[in-house]
Amino acid sequence: MAHINGTVLKRMILNASAAVENNKQKINELNVFPVPDGDTGTNMFLTLSAAVRELSGVTSDNAGEVADTVGKAMVRGARGNSGVILSLLFRGFAKHIKDMSEIDGAVFAAAMRNGVDTAYKAIMKPSEGTILTVSRVSSEQALLAAEKDHDPEHVLNEMLISAKSALSETVNQNPVLQKANVIDAGGMGFCVILDAMLRALRGEDIASSSGSVGGTLSAADFSEFSSEDIKYAYCTEFIVNIDKKNKSSNAASYDKLRAVLDSIGDSLVFVEDEDVIKIHVHTNSPGKALEEGLKYGYLTSIKIENMREQHTEKVIITGKDPVRPGERVIAKPEKKYGIVVVCSGNGISAVFRDIGADQIVEGGQTMNPSTEDILRAIDATPAEIVLVFPNNKNIIMAAEQCIAMSEKTVVVIPTRTVPQGITALLNFDPDLEISQNREIMLDAVSKVRTGQVTYASRDSLFDGKRIKQGEYLGIIDGELITNNKLL
Image (tube, rainbow, N blue to C red; front, side):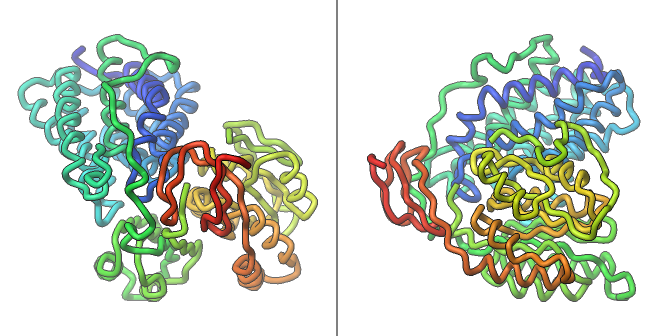
């Protein structure tokens, strides 16, 4: 096949999604970085699924148009760190071929490399031995392969061979992976994607119910990890709303901000987006990070989480006026404040509706809603200012992405549990300004203690206690209180 047009590219994406779905559990079992939560495969699949949904309505044979649809959909549907990185890879790919109706192997290689550059630019301190390493090394090989032969199948085959080789080295490049004696989960997912795309070029379609891609892998030994393995305790995220009147606010000064943040932590993601700068950093000095950000404008969407406390349902939008999946309805404001809540189950949903929720996004621990799921609920809320209560630590980031995407003013109250969400909403006063409400609600949330009963999904070491798969766990505010085979 000499060229890839829109139809072929669409088939490649469909194959990739099906292959990751088939292998997501295997990928999940490898995940040990940056926090041992085991959801990399699921997040990569759901991010790809967002693209598949959008492609169902695309009839164009133009490669650039198909890629643009994929890139935008994945950014909106990205879930978790792995999903965000994957979306950046495809967004960069799409930008490179934006005006091209078809591409050959050389352009494909260059586009993949642009995707890698896009991801590296957003993540200021990339860790070696991750999906970033695998994608970078393999894209470099793709460029070399394209110098000899522009055939897309040849280029992608060489890229896959290189990716598999790079993947096997990740265990030696990352101390966390070396400790568990496993390869990188995100890198494995990337190899699955390349394999599926190559098979599409060869005319092979992958059904989502088919067997796995690749050989047997050993699962990560989570018993080797504890909270003490986390060097920087606080996951700190915020948005700097740039003060254009400040003469010091320019590209050069932003580099200084990057440097300061980089010096006080790791896992820095620094994204400039028109009038805002989105920042994510792991640090032991969250106050210092916020103080530096304030020099460039006012801060919103502030989230600080203690990762040492972190530990790891089908998503639909429901509410008083249900929103169908894929549909965005921009409701005209009928009041000042509106409430969007993420929770699971009819009983809890009824409680939230009784205390003021306008829209319920169904989701929780086992299935996190995407940015677009939450965005649809926000847009369907007839209010000027929409408050969002994620009620789960793994949903807060997706909720915060809506701030820049919605036409409404969005304020995320970073509730980590359902009891916190209920408490916060009970302390909400529609007669107060949003800044006052936020302060009052956060203060109330800080006083909530949450107890949970769950079960262990795998053998692990939790708070110094060895846990067997299937045991029942009693947890209070992230601290394991008891574990037993009997409930």
